[in-house]
Image 1 (cartoon, rainbow, N blue to C red):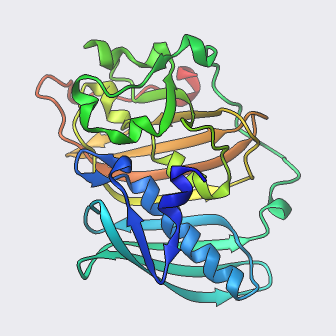
Image 2 (image 1 turned 90 degrees about the vertical axis):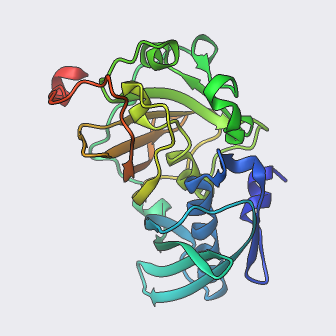
Length: 279
C-alpha cells in the first residue's frame, strides 16, 4: 500500500492525516479533496450506485492539521445517470472543508472525443527541474511524496528571475511508484506550487474555493500538467489546471480561487497575454 492510500483510509468515520502531506503547518488541500471524494465514493458503493467522481466542488473553511479528522458523508441524490454526495471534514469539532461530488460511469463519459486540448510541449522528465525540499521549500514535506519535474522554461522564479507570465508546466507522479488513478486526480490538481510563484510570490497561497472535473481514468505513467492564471487582483487569483496522462488524454481539469501576498516589486496594471498568442 502507498502512503497515499493510507491517508485516504477511513475507519469508523475517522481518517489519520499524517505530517508527510503538509505544506508548512497545514495539510495539502488536494489530499483533503481526494479524501473527501473517496469517502463519498465509498458511500455510493455501499448503496450500489456510481463510484467514479466526474465533478466536485470544495470550500475550504480552515486549514487542517496533522492528526485525526472526522469525515461525515451525506448522499444527496442517487440517479440512473448521476449521483451526488456531500462530505464534511472536521477536526476538534471545527469544519475544515465542505465538499460536494457528483458520480457517474466515467468510462461512458470518456468516449468519443469530439474536441480535446492538446498537451503542452515539455522536455523529457530527466531534462526538467526536479522540485526538492531546499531553501524556502524546506517545510513542504509533500515534495517527498511526489516526483515533480518542472519545465525549465517556467522555473525562472526559483532562480530569482520570475517571468510574471502566470504559467507553469511540469511532469508529476507519486515518488513511491504508485500509479495515478481516479482517486488521486483531485490531489494532483492541487499538488504543484502556486502559479503565483511565477510572479516571485513564493509564500503560501491558501485555497478558498475549488472546482474540479474528472474526464477519464488515467493510464499508468507520468502525468503532464499546466497551470495558469490570467487575473491576479487585490490579493486574490484564479488558478486553472489541466492534467494529461501518458496517452496525451485530458484526465482532469480545475479552477480555484486562492489568496496571495504579492511582492512589493511586482508589476501592477499589466495585461495578461492573449491565450491564443501566448501558445
